[in-house]
Image (cartoon, rainbow, N blue to C red; front, side, top):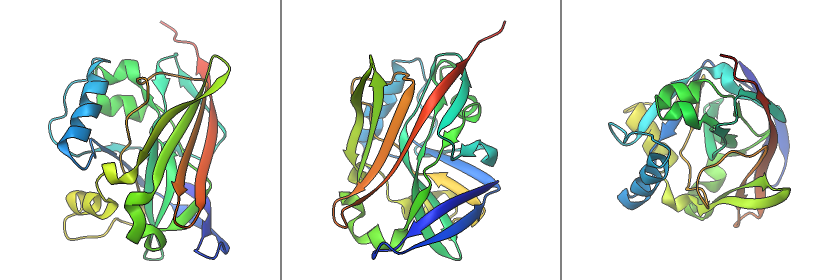
Length: 228
């Protein structure tokens, strides 16, 4: 699966790169402290999702689920997005972008792994060097908005200090090793404001207040009918 990014350095110079992915990982329950993890567990428990067997968990999804389109198709009205940092490697450099762990919430109550596997994972088209933001990682802000009743509503808004560091996730999944260059990994999410709920439009952003720049992506959700 090929993804293409405009890779920005600190001087805003860009180069076009290609990522050839063969594996995808969704890091779940990736809060840095127990209170953050418990908040997300309780948030999902309201939807009938069982407690995780361990923290963090790494859900494998098909790499073909990662798409850079401005619209996705899903079956039924029960799915919703979650903004997450996307970690990858290119020519031995760690890079970050932005992805939505779009998930079927009805199926999630039955199987979290399956609920993630059945939905596309929209990905932004820009990327940054991880080394450029590593020193001020905790200051980056993950945000998202939904269109609700015709209005743009803030849906997520929290600094990355609430989440485990990307290299800690890599170490937990690949002890003593680097993230394979063929693997894409999302790095966890922050709570939804007002509870998890579907919306026809999802807008996500990663803001860097130190370098005053952002990654952003927006997509529409087309609902396909559930046929019995």
